[in-house]
Image (cartoon, rainbow, N blue to C red; front, side):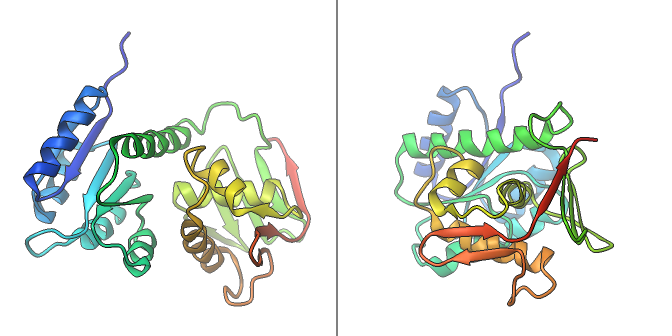
Length: 245
């Protein structure tokens, strides 16, 4: 039985960009929808449930790209790749903070875009299929019991409180806990979590590590578990107990 084509929503008001993206993605086997502004984008996301969103930040109307990202994240975890001519790190960090999964600066090559699309869809598919028998431990828990992760149920508990993580945050925390005590370089973390297409996007890690610390540390400004190794990467401090259910 032939697999159903993945549906991608392109949100961009520039007609030439729309045409190029529609043509290239359609040739690659994707079902492509197009929205011209933020209001239309939010409506189409709710109506058509796309598998991935390509989102420009500078949109006409009342909803810019950042607001679209914020509204989508209120109810769903659909992967979002931001496409923008804005090059300042501030905009990139704000988009990632609001839940974007990736960021490409215009102009970009078709090959790079296609690689990022595949990587995002692969991560989303891995999250959707989390009930499959895992090759890695199903339970990860700090020795003091403060931080608990159930890989099968995609559950994270901090103290007595359940904490909701995005798919990317979950994968990053899982990888750090699996290799507790080992310093992991920026490149190795990027490739393990985001995919082999990555390696130089250290700003992604800064954003996601900051978000993880806010969610799982008692004091995010004074982390106890997720520690920075300056110029190298990150390390999860403390013993982690692993087991299967």
